[in-house]
Amino acid sequence: MRSILRIGVAVAAILLLAAAALRQPVLTSIPYPDAAPHADPATLERHVRFLTARQRHGAADYIANAFRAAGGDVSRQEFIARGKPSTNVMARFGHGSGALLVVGAHYDAFRDLPAADDNASGVAALLEIARLLGDRKLERPVVLVAFDNEEPPYFASEEMGSFVHAASLARQPVAGMISLEMIGRYTADQTWGSFVLSLLYPNRGDFIGVAGGWNDRALARTLKRSLCGAGMKSVSFTGPRDMLDASDQRNYWARGWPAVMITDTAYLRNENYHTWRDTPETLDYRKMAAVADGVFGGIVHLAAK
Image (cartoon, rainbow, N blue to C red):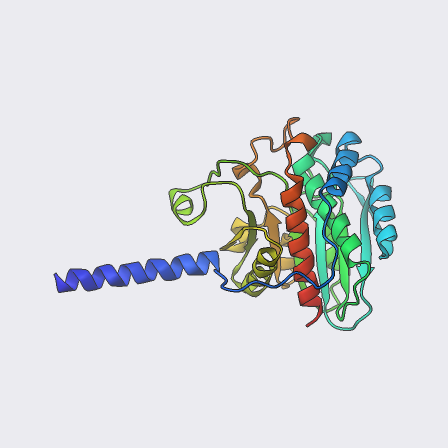
């Protein structure tokens, strides 16, 4: 009996360690920056409605104007993909030295669908983060990037906007990258791809996920702490990067830089994924605002190092 008990304790300890490695728990939060404004749910909705109504036509100009109004140093990265003119829109904040922090979201839509969650939600948050950064003095440079060409047929090719942008930074030190990929859908039920994950993670879709590989765990924990400080429930998944490479962070991993994806778990939660039902009415703008606040708080914390 004692031997069986010892084996049971050892197995339980191993499972707890594995769960901790997967979930990367944090015990403290990063307080929201003093006297900073907050992301506005109504503004987030306005951005999403503009992008979805036009199926991204005019999106690059709209994003550039919003970045400029926020006080960013705006530039465009023009390139050709499959014979089509493509554009990344960038805004740089902070004049300090040090390694660059990249925060990005793709603004293209799959087959010209409305794509409110995928990924007008991430772009809207990016624009609100720009507004919040406008008055901050940062000790480290931060660049916000709206990527073109994340969706098929460009995905996983050198014609992805994030591939082009990451390649342009090859000779610069990069501290890390944060990819905002679907952050607007919250539901009563959360599905998972496996029984094990369903045991380890919540069954209500009321949280935001932070996903990365083992080498990204420090960045993931920082963002979980800042999201907590902004009042947003978050969980993280730390696993093999090839299980998590379905967005723009993949092209920064390829360069050896730490990167994480902030996500509502996409198709695992959002039944409207890649359909005409992915509309502005299906998103929760208050939770989106909390996510934007949390990422902003993480940026300020990381840019102070």
